[in-house]
Image: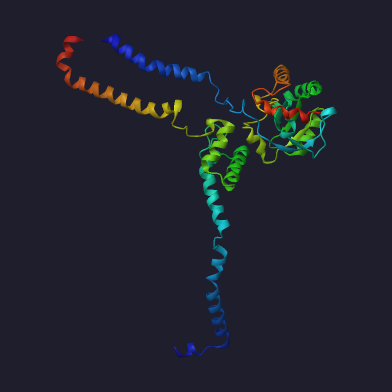
Length: 204
Length: 152
């Protein structure tokens, strides 16, 4: 009689204990993004900080994702009020510079901030090798399912979001993702039909 | 009574003015309040925006809807809801847009399908199980006493 009762008590309580224990291992702030694997949302945003060197874009220029078909694009959402953005700034700037000759395009996207603050911040941080664009009313950020800053999106040659990094990004993550994306499907975008291989026309 | 009708000039003018005002008065609110079709859809749009926004979770605050959250991101998301509704999208299409961007997590109330079904079914099962245990225990208590002494 007693072992029966113990068994039924265990049968009822064990799944609950297991469920609670499992939930302890989860971070409620860590929400899986449905974006990786899907095609990146199109955007068309104006440059407010031109960047340096070969990848510089004139202030006021419009950056369109559509103009980067067949290229590897890294989008880093940031803000001047974001402390964690300071940690990754130098790494992003250096890696972007190092990978520019290989064709990787970096863009900063200002999130919930005034371009004037962004410009001042870049100057304070000692410059930025790649251009930054403004995202008025955070429409592009919402299109990318942004939770906060910094968040970094890696877009492959096929135009799909390959990877999303939440929080300050490290040099190791950047180089590893960039290497695999630059290597993958350079001659033909993978996964897509052969009819789409007409893209290289835009790669001068 | 009589001298009330012997109207002095001043009150005659006053009366005329009053009559005119009374004639025009009903027109005033009509022109001011008459809802043009644009205003109608404006309030309707606001109502529908609130309705959809109340079902979407704010990404920067735990367990709050974007309708209730004062955070800037939530406010902008509400703006997106309004814009999309104004553009003629249905509430379900708007919700689908946010699900595509933020995952099903963005819905404050999980959809009753797949694994989520557990959330709806489990409480009912637990309730039934509890009722069963209580019924059995009560039945035992009410019938057991004579036998209980011997067995336990």
